[in-house]
Amino acid sequence: MKSFFNYLTISLLLLSVNVNLFAQKTIEEEIIAPNVPISAETKLVTYTEVVDSKGTATEINEKALNWFNSYYKNSANILRKNEDGSFTGHPRFKILNQKDKKGIETMAGTVVYDINIASKDGKFKYEITNIFLTQATKFPIERWIDKNSATYQKSYDYYLLQTDNNFKEVIKSLKDFMASTSVKKSEEW
Image 1 (cartoon, one colour):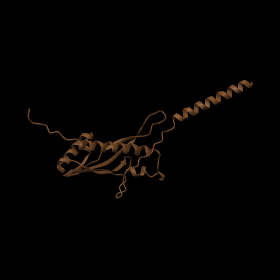
Image 2 (tube, rainbow, N blue to C red):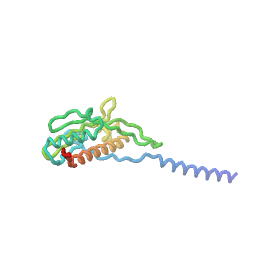
Image 3 (cartoon, one colour):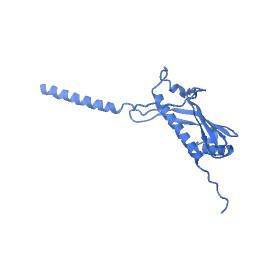
C-alpha cells in the first residue's frame, strides 16, 4: 500500500510539472506600446515631417500623387481633396487581436486616418492624423494611450504597435518614392 501512495505522489508531481510547462507556453507575449507622436496643438496622434525634395511644387505634388495612386488600392475612392500643391486622402487598414492560445489572430477592426501631402518648391510635408478605430461611433486612437482610463484594455498596446508599424511603412514608402529619380522616356526609337 505504501508503494502505491509513493507511485501516486510521484505521478501527481510529474503531472503538475507537465501542466506548468504547458501553461507557460500559452502565456500571452508581453507587448510594449510604442511612443507615438502627439501634436502639441491638437493633442492628437500626428505623424508629420517636412522633407526636402528636388523639383518645383507642381512636380513634387505630381510625384506625391503618383505615389498615392500606386501605394493605395482603390486610391480614387480614398482621395478626398486635391488642390494645387496639396491633396488629402482618407485611407484605412485592418488591425488584428493578439494571437489566442491556438495561435489564431482575429480581426480587431479597421483603423481610418487622414493623410495630407502638401508641396512647395524643393520640399513636401506629410501629415497623418485624425486616426480612429471604426465602431458604431468614432473611437480615437488617443484613448488607447491612457492606461489610467477605466476603459483601457491591454489589447490597445498591440493595436498601437500595429498602427505605428503601418504608419512607419507608409512614411518609408513615400520617402523612398519621392527620393527616387523619375526617368523620362525618350520618344525616339
